[in-house]
Image (cartoon, rainbow, N blue to C red; front, side, top):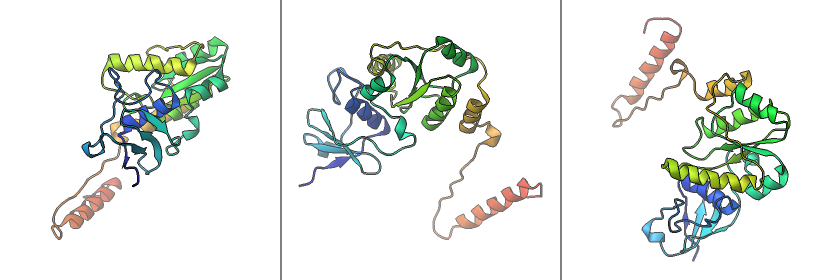
Length: 248
């Protein structure tokens, strides 16, 4: 009989990546006593081995009844996958660097501070659900652009998700940063005051455009033949006419 499968939530998938990479040690599985790293399973799957899969159906790990996880393969989907390194890989590649957790685009004063260190810098872009100020992809784009302003800087994506409690998130963040940095220093930047470099500003503007440049989706629903397509076409015609200054 095949092992049943379950696709966790985005937050649970982020936790799973950290678990299988060793970033949450000494936590090694889901639902350990006192741990915020939890996973909700349908009742029909409780008490048996379950394959945890990504939204594309790729098996990532086997979940045991006690909550422990056995990795099957590393995540393979999503943009900038090359930037997702485990703590061990990160320490091997970037030993001796200063590690800087990043949740937002970096400003000129922050980059000046990093340049002043005079040593390699690794920007740990915290991309997990609920953590970054920008979208995860924009945070990585902005971090890569910022790294170009700091000689020798690198970017590593860390899927640290928010668990809805500031104290819990802080404690998990400290734990995960220690796993990635090892014996090297971790530098927390300030409040981000100041202007962005032009290339970083372009990423922020594209991710968070002003209201007059944001798109809008109109969803028409109703019974067959009720006029949805007719109304939708009338809206399109009106918008196109308005775009060129004609009467609606």
